[in-house]
Length: 302
Image 1: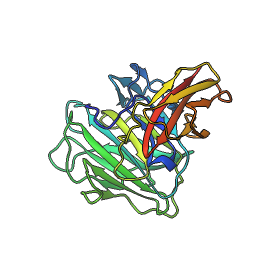
Image 2 (image 1 turned 120 degrees about the vertical axis):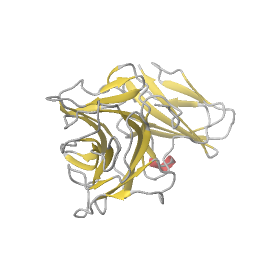
Image 3 (image 1 turned 90 degrees about the vertical axis):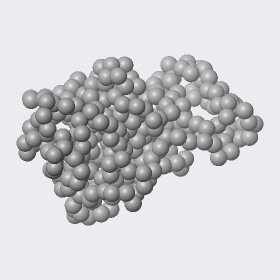
Image 4 (image 1 turned 180 degrees about the vertical axis):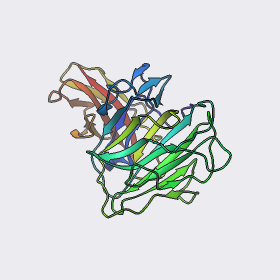
């Protein structure tokens, strides 16, 4: 899949006070298990079935196997969105049967919402997609059939107050064609994670996923006004401080988050240095704001 939405490798979790992106991942990891990279964790099933290959997640359904992997984040109110690119490999014929297992969804504990699945075509195409607001089986199916091997962008909204999901394919604005899942009992789940799922289905299709974004608006994009000349060093660091610099000399607001999205540092600096001595060894996300420009970097502490 062509990567067109991301400026950074790996997963970035950001503060809503800085923008509308909660998390994003372009899956530029070494080939192998997804779990263990960028905060992805196994929450159900047997590990090692969800794989990364050539910078995308490969969900290969198969009889007798299942893995559920999720990435957690802090809850936000109202409507929350996920968006990603996906394609379906040609399994040798169109999607058939009645067992269409969901492969992506929001979650809160064991409560799942806005479940997306590959379903049988409604016309003469290869497959379609379905969305379920708060059930395991699709409430609504996309009205136009899709084609194996073609990359599509799916956008899913979940209204946590009304407990209803909405789905778009290759949409540019919210007014583009969409479908609504059932309006379930209010309120819905206050979601705290996004999950990918590999299981078994009638056709046991292979779904490829890339360029994931989770946030609070329809127009999700990781593109932003970057801080000119931004530099963070040493990184990785085993020191008590890291140095931060840019081409400007105005104060810079710096926040650091752990991989679960918890803010662990917030400072406004003018001396180009921030104390990290209270942080444990691990991977963090550093977000800097200066003169209405923003930069996000992974910070590794040894």
